[in-house]
Structures are given as C-alpha cells and as structure tokens.
Image (cartoon, rainbow, N blue to C red):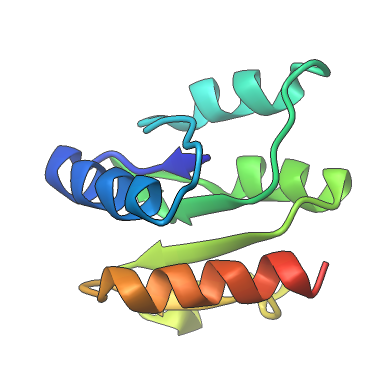
Length: 114
C-alpha cells in the first residue's frame, strides 16, 4: 500500500514497485481513506509506505493502525526525523528525495524481518 499525496512521487513509486513484481494498492492520498482501507478486515496487506505529511495532515493514525495489525511499514518524508513522535522511533525511515532502489531495499528488509 502506498500512502502518498504528491502525484508525481506516487506515480514514480508505483512504477518502481510494479517493475519489481509488487501488486500495489494506491496511491492513497489522505489519512481518512488510508484508515478506511486499513480498517476493512477483508483487505490483505503485506507492507505499506507512508508519507508523513498528507496535505498538512499527519499520517500517524494510519501508522498506529498498522502497528496494531502488525503490518510492516516505512515512513518517507521531507521532514526531519526529529519531528517523529517517540511511538514511531523504531519505524524505518527514508528522507525525500530518495532513490526508488533504496526504498525497495528498505521495504524488502522490513517485510523479511516481520
């Protein structure tokens, strides 16, 4: 699942993930929709990529839901990591701009360690 509100970033990310053989849900561009999707018990998810700031709204409620569901995820953001609440200090993080290969490697790492 890709939660990203910047269309070009999301498009590039979707293409990179699909090129690696992933089936991608998204992009989801707001927190309310992310929570709606994640709350559906029929929705099966292997991992997620979350942009921290979605149109001025922080993605943390969706991240909390992923933690409760024990679904691995990574944050991507242009924000400084110091802005991250302590609850999420162990969540893998990639600063924007990033190389798609770095994100794919990080995502594979969190999936295999869960």
